[in-house]
Image (cartoon, rainbow, N blue to C red):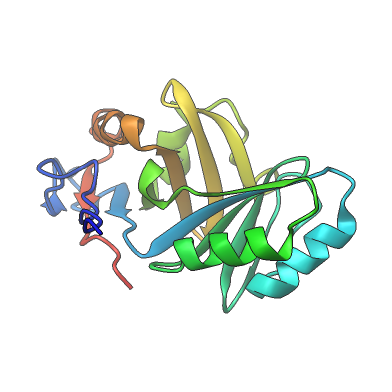
Length: 206
């Protein structure tokens, strides 16, 4: 069998660690790190298939959220509600194919779709004191903590393309876009963040 080609980031050749233009106070207002530590699986079920959702959640070890715009997490990873009967599963790197196959087998006979999106998405973790100011330039949603609290997620317009935002930790928001828009997002973050100062951190691998 032919070998599976090694995964290459959409930001290859453009990802340069270190501080960019930094404001006079010396602190970058935005910090960026690409995430290489994830496997991504999209799961679709019938919107009313609660039993299927429970079975899938039990299999992967994450309770699938049923509240729009919310996520749930466990030691096994995270599940983001991205639409009625649809979740984005964020799992440890390397688990995409096995999880996709296991879910397809467990949900056989039900209306469902399971897709390994690991190599089809670019994921950037963004943080810093001017994070919300920066993202507000490129998305219409309200990012105030009262409206977008810890654990919130949204599929929305991001830098003129469709993206997913996930308030994954306090002060940290993960940004997901299609791989073909990865470099566009990266360049936009740098351009829009220039006035605040941008620092690129080492890519996340674990």
